[in-house]
Amino acid sequence: MKLPAFLNPKGIGGQIAALVVASIIALHLIITASFLINRPDRPDPFSVGGQHQLAFAAQLLAAAPPSERPPLLSDLARAYPQLELESLPAEAAPAAAETSHPALQGLTRHLGSHYRVFALPLSEHRIGVVLPDGAVISANIPVQMRPPFWGGPWMMTLLFAVISVTLLGLWAARALAAPLSSFAKAAEDFSLNGADAALPERGPEEVRAVARALNRMRERITGLIDDRTKMLAAISHDLRTPITRLRLRSEFIEDESQRGRMLADLDQMRSMLEAVLSFLQNNRRSESMTLTDIASSLQLVADQFADMGHKVSYDGPDHAMATVRPDDLHRCITNLVENAVRFGTETTIRLMVWTEGAAIEIEDDGPGISDARKDNMLQPFVRGDSARNMDKAAGFGLGLSIASAIVLAHGGKLSLHDRKPQGLCVRIHLPREQHKQRAAA
Image (cartoon, rainbow, N blue to C red; front, side):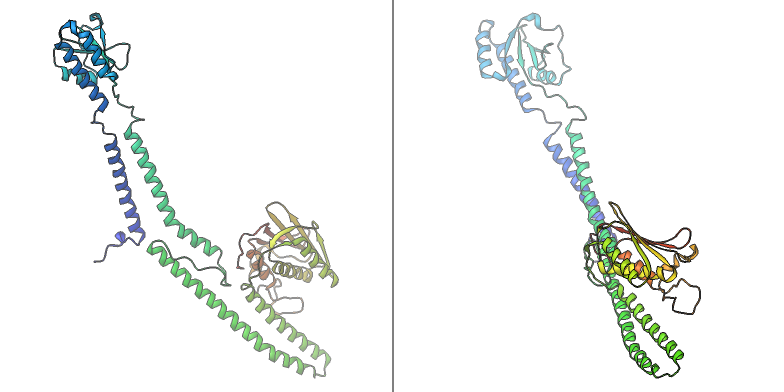
């Protein structure tokens, strides 16, 4: 027989229903145990025993002649020391019997109507008994008073039950929500290099089904990226051979100008293939995070471009440590500086460091980018110039995309800003420390 969905113990609905039932049962067990331990209808054994002993002593004294009562009272005091029996003068008894106190009512029932019971005014647990002939004795009987509401067993039981059920509910909520949190964390740390472990398939049946679906989706995405990269790598490899043959054949062109243009076109085709393949393979890089002096890396990039005759300068501290992927960061800054020197005459690499992280700015004095196109410029194959034809000054539209992917892999952010009076400022925000490796988006 198949149970309804909400009663299936492997599903979320069934587990919530089981939790509610378990909480109700636990609450009833706690209240029942408290009732059995602290029964309000059960009299105090010591108090009841003391009443019986006092009743027996009073009846025994009443039956004895007055001359024999003093030694008999002494014997009873030794036999029942907890009663602390004493003889009182007849004037100590009130005119009317007091029956408002529960202990006095019980003792009156034991003794009968010929005896009068009263509470001594200056003692909390002291009771006096008037014998039928008018003699008065007193005894000490502890009286169990009704506890106040806030300190009674019922309130303590209720508080204990509420706390227990609340803790049980919090534990159950955490057990149900923990797999969902792991899904969010796995999606945030998803990597295409296959380094991340698969999602654990635990929890309710619905959660396990979602984990299985996400794991299959990860496998399909990784497989698609692998197939795409392999296909483009094969195309790039196969195209290099005819490009090489065309380059060799172009050497035999007699017209020098035609030969130069042919060689330039072939070089541009080879560069395009390498750039596209590099962009696609960037998502598969698995370089480890390393504590690196990023100030020295930026100075190195500035010196390399200065050696090639470009006006590139570095502005920042001499040393600044951060946890990054050194080769990826070097490649990112190199791509940005290449764009800067392509469109401008002077470029500045600026580094600013604070406690939480660091900011890197690459400024140039070129024509800049309009505000309407800044967001699109970070997309692949989007070039800064509006012309469709390619020349030596135009790139392939991958430099900013690769740089943005590298920055995102570090948990940072890349943004484009205007430079005054003209030019472009590419700003990179990097956290100081990386606790986990991230894959490039």
